[in-house]
Length: 462
Ligand code: GLU
Image 1 (cartoon, rainbow, N blue to C red):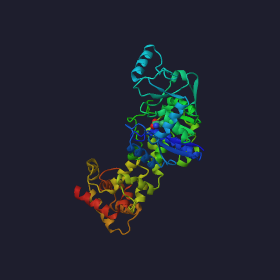
Image 2: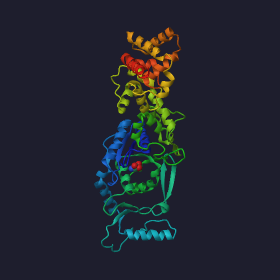
Image 3: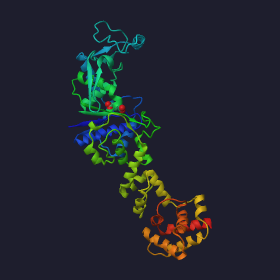
């Protein structure tokens, strides 16, 4: 069974790049009928907080990404790590190192002066002498001194690391007993049964160290997939200036979960030239072997294009639910179907949609000056009054066509062009030019409100 994981360090919010690797891991597990588990890497007590973990969980909930089983918290696993440290010490695969900080600094300076790679010199690796008093030792793992460590990467192919060039006996437990990052990641992945690790390629340099831990503990290696980073249009690492990096900011900006997930799946993965993927399709088609080898480029226009697509194709009841985040309660609005049908083709984001809705359903308190000048001239008040009277006397006014009919009558009776009634009516109803079809607007706000808005405009501008 395929078991994948997402292992965020909770330092603030869920990062969009993190979400992408989480999505890839999720899809791959689902495609294989496997499991996708969540591990919170919260060992850095100064930087990690429960709040940050909650932020990640909130983002997952928003996106509908469900992890399997209980969440694993690294901060609760000290006993497990201690057990493996002891095991490695007992087996002679790790040792206590008494080199002080000052000695290490000294060592580094000498190596730098000799233009050598800076590394621990292995002084205590096979030490038989008397250890210094008053120094709390760190624990180092015995890394191979020679040979190759090969990361068999599902995206990048075999990556060969020369032990001599990159490794030294790295620390697996600090002087206070706290285990270190690469040590605990390898243990957790192994004990949690993770057999496919999909993560950002910023972690690639950690992988040989983790492989050493796997080997020392005789754990079976997982498959690794290191996913190239997301870049901005200038080919640099994505930063806040290029677009939001916090996943929840996308919610606030009015993107639907489906749009964001679709956007992310295509950042670094493709299936022919297909752009639109439902969650079911993603699960069916995703395969980490198709992840691109080079970095992907973040493109806001693409995201907006996808969002328009998803807004257009979201049922109105769901749209109404989405819009509640902008304090818009449309659930009981009797004309919500007309309203949302009218706007779903126009809005690029839900936020934009919310403000378009508000422009329609809220009585205007302000009239755009230019629009007033342009529309309110000649016998315009007469035209508006004529129309208002027709609305007042009409019995059945429900559909846009009912209102359209009345406008047509005024046009015919007064022998004017459609624009002569259309423009002033628009300004009366919305306070400005632009916006959706007038007959729809009136059907949405209803008879009384239509009359009221015309009266308001006449009073204000006669
Ligand atoms: N905790 C790491 C991070 O948030 C991820 C570790 C991993 O995927 O192996 O970047």
